[in-house]
Image (cartoon, rainbow, N blue to C red):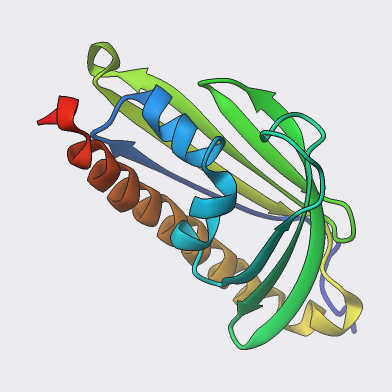
Length: 163
């Protein structure tokens, strides 16, 4: 009767076709993660690598984001790493995970990107805003794939071999 929301996870999914080979998109997502993530997700105002070496399974990082005027700091780790296909992140200090999945299209000339974001729980004080949170998270997922499309296609076109 006086429920403050559910414990249902908030899941957003968005996909897009990118005029760039899947391998190049994966490189942008993984090899260039620490340089590129703030570009496709401008809400990221700080990003710090906490483990040495290239992005791989188990890599730890810290981010500070400002979403809808709300500043959050989280630590996350790479929990999925399949070169050329998938890379996923899970919160260490917060209950979220996200995955970027790639599939080749058009004989390898383009890619299909699927982005999935899951917030496994909403804090009690935020539950009255659950519907709004779901809308904002879905809009963020759609913006993420559009940004990745724009940025990876521009990087692809800038390569001398692509012209």
